[in-house]
Amino acid sequence: MMCPAFFFAPIFLKLASMRVALGKLEAIIGHKFKNLKLLERAVTHRSWAYENMPGKIDEIVRGAENESMEFIGDSVLGLVIAEQLFLRNPTLSEGDLTLMKHNLVSGSALATLSEAIGLGDFLRLGGSEVKAGRRKQSLLTNAFEAVIGAVFWTAVT
Image 1 (tube, one colour):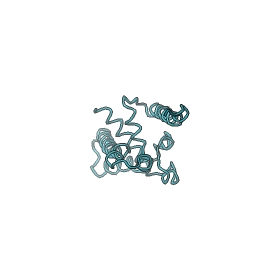
Image 2: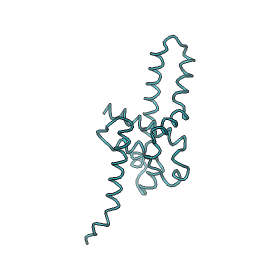
Image 3: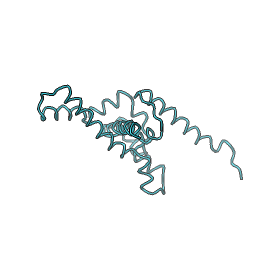
């Protein structure tokens, strides 16, 4: 039995609107992804993945959400900031450099940067997280790191 075309319309509209949103985010961050799925994963919270992938094994769900990208992005961001601080302040002590780095990569600093680019508007969140709000500091911080991780992953793969 054939389904009418309008049956699939919501699915296609949702996919098209996600591509448009991701294209806008690419323009904001100034990076064009060869594989847009990496950026999609970077903005996908685990709550969305678990709600929208019922019955899938954990490995597949984890492959759709952003926690691994966040892990990579956190490390990359720490390295880049540490390098720049060292290069710009070669005579400062380790303690001073560490304090400066801590302030630059803190959750509040990254959340502020996320808000400045409107990252919360691009996040795919499950119902519980939507209720908590797209401006929640931990969501913004984690997503910011995940986007950095996705950009890095694009560069090395």
